[in-house]
Length: 482
Ligand SMILES: Nc1ncnc2c1ncn2[C@@H]1O[C@H](COP(=O)(O)OP(=O)(O)OP(=O)(O)O)[C@@H](O)[C@H]1O
Ligand SMILES: [Mg+2]
Image 1 (spheres, helix red, strand yellow):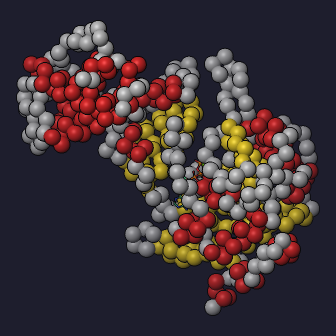
Image 2: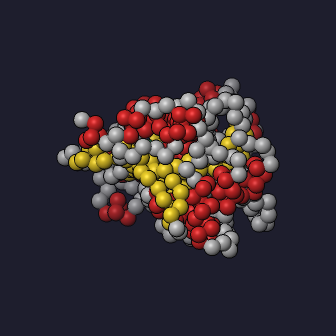
Image 3: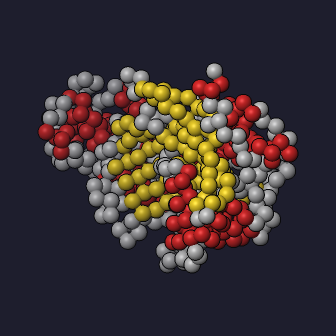
C-alpha cells in the first residue's frame, strides 16, 4: 500500500549484510556474545574499546544495525515521492523496511528497541538525525558538538555531556551537509566553516576538518519560540523590578542603549526583552547576521546580512544593511551585535536622530565596552583623533547594560551604567544599579541581590518630562533603604 514511496527499480538490489555475524539474538541486558565479524562502520572511541561493557557493546551493535538499515532506506525509498507523504505514511513505510531488514539480518529487538530504532530512522530520513531529539527538547538552549562522539548541551545555564553520539565522522558530516545544503550553502575542505539558520530559526555554525582538528565542530543556539520577556526575566531573577521600571523609562524615552556581555550571557535575550518597551507607532528596523530577534511591534523591518558566495561575490554586510536602513526612514534601529566596521554607522545613527537605537557588544564591563567601541572604530580604518572618537561615543551612547552568565549558570544583569559626558579625554559614567554578591551556597548557587547605587539617574528629568516619574527610592542602596 505504501509502495509508491519505494523505488520501482533496484528495490531489492541491496545485498544482505553479513548475516552470519548477526545470528545472535540480543535482548535487552543480554548483549551479543561476539562482535560482528566485519568491522563496524562506527569504530568506537578508543577509550571505550579498552573496556567494552555490556551496554556499550549493545549500543555499538544497534548503531551498526541502524547504519545498515539506513543505507537500505536511502536505497529503497523514493525520495521524490516522500515529499507528498504524510508523517504517518512515512513512519509506517520506515518501520516496514526496518522490520524486513531486521528479519533478513536475523536480528530480534524488543518492542522498546524497535520503537527507538524506528524513531531514530525517521529522524535520519526526515530530520537532523541524532540532533533532532535535542532540537525538539525545549529545555535545551545550546547544542555543542565536538566531533562525532561528544555532544554537549546547555540546560538552565549548565553545560553537560549528553549521551547523544553520531556513528562516525561521516555521519556527522552528512548531517552538517544536510543542514547547509538546505540553505543553499556548502561546507568542505576548501570552505571549512559556515553560518546558517535552521528551518526552526536556530542559529547554526559548523567547522569541518582539517581546520577542526578532532572532527567537525557544530554549535547551535536554539531558537526559543516564546522569547523571555521583561516579566519572565524579573521572575527568573535576571534583574529587579526597580531595574525593570528604570529600563522601561530608558527605552520609552528613547535613550540609546548598548547591552554588553560575554558569549552566551543573554545579550540577545535582554535586547529582545528591552525592545518590548518600544511603542507600536514606531518604525523599527533590525539588522542581524543571523535573524534571532523577535520583536512584538507591528511595524518592524528585518534585515539579515549575507556572506559572499563560492565565487566570493554577493556579500551584504551589516554595514551595508545599516547604511540602507538609514534611508528607510526608521524611528529606531536595532543591530543584533556590533562587532566590526558597522560601528561607525551605528554611532552616527545614534547621534543623528535615531534616538532609541540599541545594539549589543561583546565586553566584560561598561568601561570595557567603551574600549571595544573605540577599537572597532580604529579597526574600521577611520583616522580620527581619540578624543573625537570618544566624544562621538560619549554623545551617542546613553546607557550600557552589562549582563553575565555566572558560575552557577544563572544569567544576571550585573550593572546598569549611564554615560554622562566627557571630562577632558575621559568618558564619564555613573553606575545606577548593580548586582551585589553576598555569598555562596554549598551547592554552588551564588547568593546576592540587586541594588541601586544611591545615585539618581542623570536622565531623571527627561523621564519625568516624558511621563515616567520614577520614585527616587528606586535608586537607593539596599543597605540604606533598611
Ligand atoms: N535570564 C535568563 N534566564 C534563563 N535563560 C536565559 C536568560 N538569558 C538568556 N537565557 C538563555 O540563554 C541562552 C543564551 O542567550 P542569548 O542568545 O541571549 O545570549 P547571547 O549573549 O546573545 O549569546 P551570543 O554571544 O552567542 O550571541 C538562550 O538560550 C537564552 O534563552
Ligand atoms: Mg546573541
